[in-house]
Length: 250
Image 1: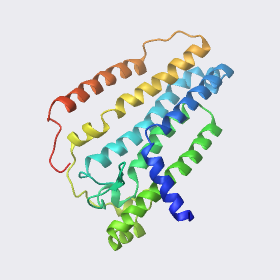
Image 2: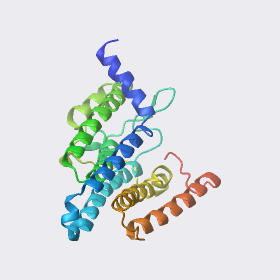
Image 3: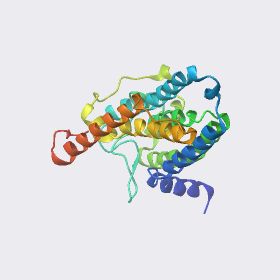
């Protein structure tokens, strides 16, 4: 098999397992965080700055989360080169809004969400290793999606891709979104994101406290974790039991 076909095949396969593979990173990160907490970090020497650093990591993660919200809220149904078990799906090519500045805004959002978590470990080499892993992993997924879009949309895709960077946004290219912002679509597609952020941050906090044999206090992370999890469960019930979040074409 030629390298071109191999990259596309592996990209499609990695996309189908995109929900489970990041869990491996999370487990490895928690284990490394436990080791670093046991060994001692810079925040043990400067505890007065630990909260500020934690909030900085949370801010980076929220940059990614809001990037995803903005992207999803302005897109129609069946776009963004979505993969299924049978193949990829794209009823039209997104070229306005955030897609006018960058070709893969969802993966850009994912990067910030995960790098904020990686920064929690307070180890430069772990963050570098994560960035390398993310590049290798998502480069193949992006390649597979772009091959599909190139075959389906031809010159229209090539013209857009030629001027739009794949990962680092070029803000001067911004064009007003073709579709209005849909909170219903955001809630349907991204309802688990907020709870997931606080669950993961709470896990890192609890693991660190247990390793250091310190008490687990009901802080802002745990309160936010409980609150957002309850909200997620309510929204999940609303989605499954009602049609309140349904919206034609979105």
